[in-house]
Amino acid sequence: MKKTMHITWLGEQRYLGVAESGHQLLIDNSAVKVGVSPMEALLAALATCTAYDVVEVMNKRRTPLSSYRIEVEGERAESDPKRYTRITLRHLAAGPGVSETQLLRAAQLSHEKYCSVAASLNSEIVVEAVLEHQGQPA
Image 1 (cartoon, one colour):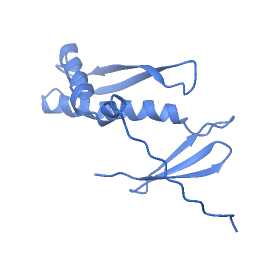
Image 2 (cartoon, helix red, strand yellow):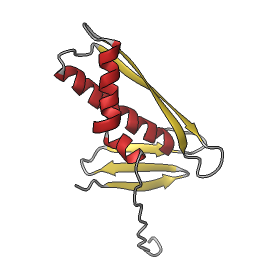
Image 3 (spheres, helix red, strand yellow):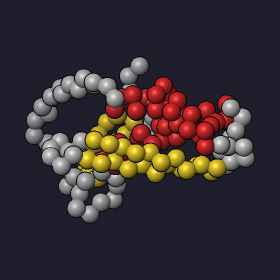
């Protein structure tokens, strides 16, 4: 199954991503930001992927959450490419009958089995650059 996203440069270091569904994401690394940076977007992708799983697991176990959020923090290397060396996801949840043990198990299942973003971060990914020169703009 392939997923595609088209990224268009808007000037400075600002880009608009448009998914196949038509939904948009503003990525911005300009001096004056109006969107998230690429590395912030990666943290958000990981956190929302695992949040989706945790909510689903808790619902299936008949212990739905009444409130839930994730605080995600990434530590980056000092030298280029300044990749994340550690990412911490802090799960903050509440609900009738929800125990810390159940929440921990749901988070572990997400990180170890279900979250495709976490699995992608833990694997070797083949990244291929294909260039198409479009000539001078009119």
